Image (cartoon, rainbow, N blue to C red; front, side):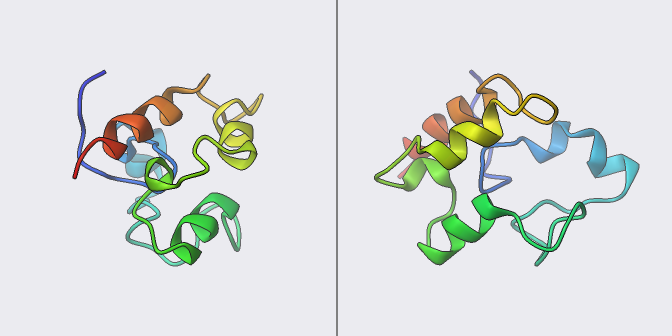
Length: 91
């Protein structure tokens, strides 16, 4: 996997996301609320723990992160978890 700069809390590569250009999403690091709702549980969890992304958490990969990564409609078959693992190696 190619190392990318940290773009999200959950491991999504925002620069590759269709919503970046489609609706002008600036990515969860740069916005208070996601475009699709009031809160994102993953973003909230990471920010409450004062981390940059899931890969920095001692509980990674947790049930919440896995549920989003493997969600039937919005998941990416774990790609975002692998990205967080890569980001977690950055010190």
